[in-house]
Length: 273
Image (cartoon, rainbow, N blue to C red; front, side, top):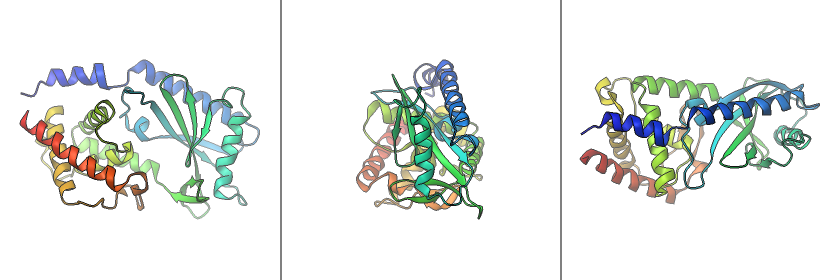
């Protein structure tokens, strides 16, 4: 039994982040970018900001079990000829430290400055530069290196896969995030989960495979389980929009093996339901 109305209500009432929180998130991002644009150092380098991750893909879910919901955005900056990669990071962090609003909220991560709000929300600000040779890069602070990225490409890839899946991919991603955060039986970064699920959808697949949410959940889980069965060892997890970049550094073999086992289990449950 598909219980279409139940799935719709469950997503709306339990899984999806409500519009009030989404509006609050948007207001916070606007306030952050306003502060950066008016900063005496960073303001002249500011080009624009680009939503990325769950915020850009519309796959944010309500926080569970002390998890936080968040927005990631790329802070597009002008290149400075004599700056090393980590200088961009340091200057963005320094701008927040100069702000009375954000100096107590900012924390340093390896690829972003995180603004932490009381409650269950944070915003990650990722320095992003288009170099003179045309490369689009973010900063790996620990290694003092640039890393290639293609944020618009990933978002376009996600939209294409969701369109092929009749708009159901976003719903399936949210449901799997809910299972991850609520049951806490496996761990996987959202970008890897999105990539693994999205890559199972191909243009030659029959549209009926994704005719509604329960059908799409069953289909995509079964396809993912079958694919994972081919790889006892974690395979290269390539960024679909930037083939020279992988996400393997964000996971490990033990986490992969557990994820593989749980997806097989949950897929069998959904198939039997």
